[in-house]
Amino acid sequence: MTMRARALAIACVLAACTLSGCAAPPAPHARGEGLRIVSLNPCTDAILARVAPDKLVGVSHYSHDPSAASMPVAEARRWPPNGGSVEDILAAHANLVVASSFLPPATRKALDDLGIPVVTLGMANDVDGNLAQVRELAEAVGEPQAGEALVGQIEAAIAAAAPSDGRAGPATILWQPGGIVPGDGALVVDLMRRVGLRPASATRGLGQGDRLPLEAVLVDPPELLLHSGPRGDEQSRALHHPALRKLDLRSAEFDPQLYYCGGPSLIRAAERLAQIRDEAA
Image 1: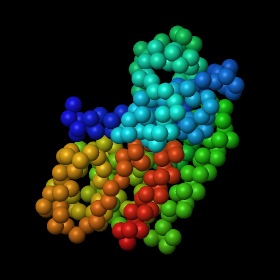
Image 2: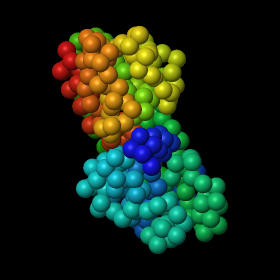
Image 3: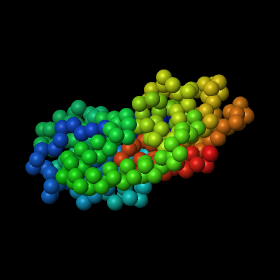
Image 4: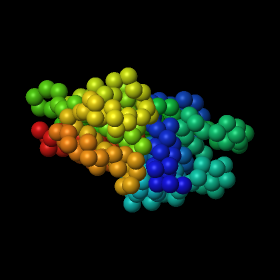
């Protein structure tokens, strides 16, 4: 697999794991004392590591990969990784599984047959939806107070990152590996707005995962270009294109680890976006 293909594959998996709310809450007997949770995606890994670390017995293998994790890998390695198979879940003696809504039907049926409750999560389109998901997941694992504490930390970080003068900042594009942009209705775009970065007009009408080619950036350039991804991929080469380098725009790196997920990632993402905004000013 090429570097670009690997980056796109990771992006697709993590986008599928972005959170919005809980479905199929665990059975009452699975809550509280004795709960053993296996998380199957890196977004929920990071939340559970904060709200229920003593109940977490396994994290997604993505959280042990620096290019895919949504929390520091050193922290994720406190828990063993799993590949999402029923065998891995049974080996961890889990009595609750947290997964994305893309959990394979065969895996879900096997867990249902084994009597192991599953919490499934979809996608969050904005900060408020993601904070609601944090609360719901914390409630589902019997840790509502820890969930409220984490929500409070996220809200405080976003408030601290908001522009002090209330004015909109530079028109901005977040260019992801392969020339993909988050587009309207993406969690990271809502966060960008909250810290004073305006989505550039070139991204209007584009949805989550749409591709913005170099030509469109040249025709309608932003004031600020956020970029990420492995060196040598198509987007990285485009950043050094002579035509782009002639434009009077500022650029900054924005680590994918900060925008693939919500939850605790929003704290570091808000701080980094505010830093970029202030440096661009």
